[in-house]
Image (tube, rainbow, N blue to C red):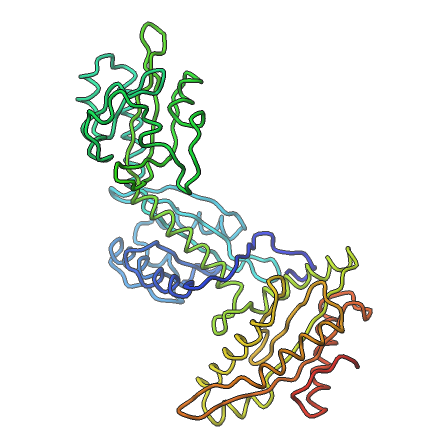
Length: 450
């Protein structure tokens, strides 16, 4: 949320899933993975993947370092000027995609500005994907499609194409298929000729839904009497599915359409790369909204979501309560056992509390040992009951450390918007006051009044 109370619409939040931490580590430590790097407003490195470091070493024979200006590593003046222009565009708040060529390789660069809490641009992130194979495949398919339009004889078509190729009549039945298509699909020629190809190897979507005949690229090309070009899924004889780039071109005889010829290319490698990039985007969103130690939401996400819930409560009149707590005498735990054990206690408390919450409750760590919960559609009395269950569960929980049972308690302050509260700051301030009242009254208790 910005200082003026508005929200950064560029932010998008996603649910927390198991394994995201492993995915982050694999992306950033894989020297052959998706290339990602982030710069501040002075073009200095904030973060980068091993793959980016390897590419910079290959391109400019240099070892990059955090905090150094990326432009200083680029030897070519023209490349440096082009990079600076793209960086400045992202720093101006623009999100965009450019395709570039280095040597014999093609790259897709996705530029995204990094927004601060006040809505200002604090830096930029660049995702780089090697699309050489995709570009070559696109060009190859375009050239082959143009050539097929000029060919009339089946022998000439077969001799000019290097990808999967087959033709169908007006009913969708196969009239010819080349060796490459048979090899990829795992069929013999006699198993395909005369059969409806849509039912044979183009019958379902990736997610298992039935692929209706009228939606098929072949029948769409016949219906519109025009070329169709799309990414779709085919199924091999053994049931394995794989993504393809397919081009369907009507076959004409004396200006009359007699069938369709389809050229396709297996794009599994490119598809997997795209999925890896999507996963990287997903993890980066998680990193921006979650506490890395406990896995619950962080303060930034809490403040933005809390402001939305307050506004919704005022609009609808529905109740909204908050419970704020911290761990009693947490410093003593750190002093006696060390910060690593203190971290284990924080995780234990977070897990214990999570077991008592609903899906629409918002639970966040907003300080060292300080936590807060937002409970939508919950009045003060019900929120106090939830807080008491949480307090007792934390009191009963314990951590086994070198044969010693370590436990802790929490002091909780609870408040509700029905107590004349109109904004998130006031809600948290009153909950915080009651939390400290709980401590003054002896700790390990819940306070719901001033």
